[in-house]
Amino acid sequence: MFSKRIFLAIAALALVTLACGININLPMERINPGAVQTEEISIPAVGTSDPVNLTIGFGAGELDIHPGAQDALVEGTAEYNVPELKPEITVDGNTVLLKTGEMKIKGLPIFGDKYKNIWDLKLGESLLDLTINAGAYQGKIELGGLSIGSLTVADGASQAEWSFSQPNLVEMDTLRYETGASSVSLEGLANSRASKIIFKGGAGDYTLDFSGQLQKDMDVSVDAGISNVKIVVPKGVPARLNFNGGLSNVDVNGNWEKSGNVYKMVGDGPEITFDVTMGAGNLELQNR
Image (cartoon, rainbow, N blue to C red; front, side, top):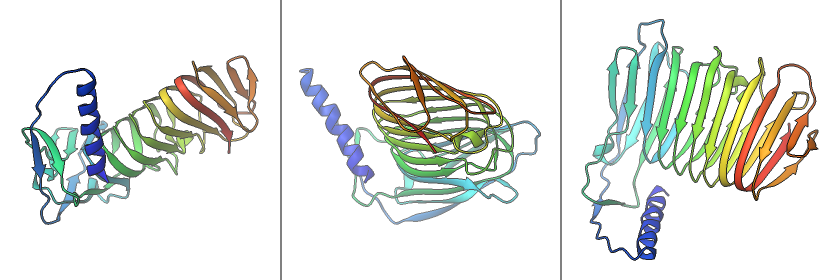
């Protein structure tokens, strides 16, 4: 699947080059997968009361992350069949980097049909400032019940499901998510306990579901290009959404009330305030 995405990216580059009338001879290098290797990943907990700055860098493949590491910061497995993808771990005090190994190639890569890179990771109970950088991947990421002080995500052509099925054990300062041409769903966002959520997307399908226990006011900024954006807020949660949409369409379902470019939902308790900017596409407002 991911070899096709890489092929499409190369094809798009070729089309742009032709359209611009520029001749560029890019060397091609075939990457031949070998036998599947399984690597055990175990990063001990860092003995500090300060937040651990944990960065996970992942390229193309399948990425699953969930709670459950016992007496460790991170534990799990990595399965891969390109030797250069062997995971690399760097620990410097309370800064920890877990990343896919880098392939040293001289041109554009062409992968065989049996490319495999699968990470299945568990996170422990340490207080985390968590950063996840990923490329073209499929993923299921469950972060409920952990202690995450901040979360920063940047990915590319992804198909990912993120969730906070349980409340975050600490208040989160900022949750920042930047993505490209992808299909992304974020569920249980009220459980993140974030003061601010910043979501930036390109051309894709994005779902932001604010189910869970909203314990304080939350500010949410959404900036998307040509895309479909769905925002789901539970009934009874007060919300105000300011919309700047260009050529976008807004579909309203549920208890939202419209006044100009402002959409409101009446309720009790902490409030969610949205600022949504879209170039073109469709915005759907729902209740759960």
